Length: 157
Image (cartoon, rainbow, N blue to C red; front, side):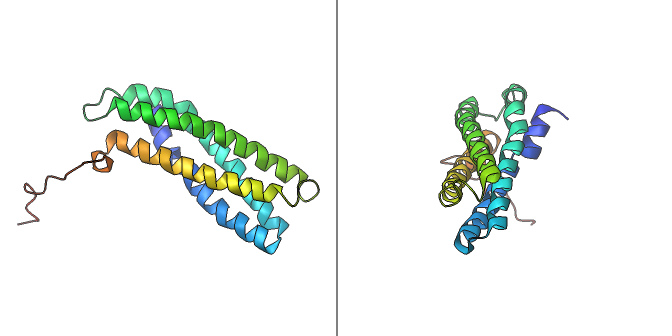
């Protein structure tokens, strides 16, 4: 697989896994269920694991796509800047989730799930923004001010 293929294959996983982890953590905290809280922690560790191939394929993927005619280098740079911050945050989320998993339910049993939940929500927001910025790189329909050319479309006539 090439770097752009790796990048495209893995790019939705952190976002989707975060989206699954958040309600599981919420419900686990609400029900005081250690199995659900631990599941949320494990899912957040998976977020970090799936972020690794994204981060390490990003530079090479950039080198391939930046020469494509409709690809915006400004959008690539913006995506890259936020992606780096998201990667650092994913490391933080993975570390605190692992710490919570290893220490739960002993130490931090009251506060740690809530801290991880807040970090999970922030991580989801960051990954959603990174995904949006990544989509704008080669999808002009996601760019501000895009107007589709509908007059050349004959609707099958």
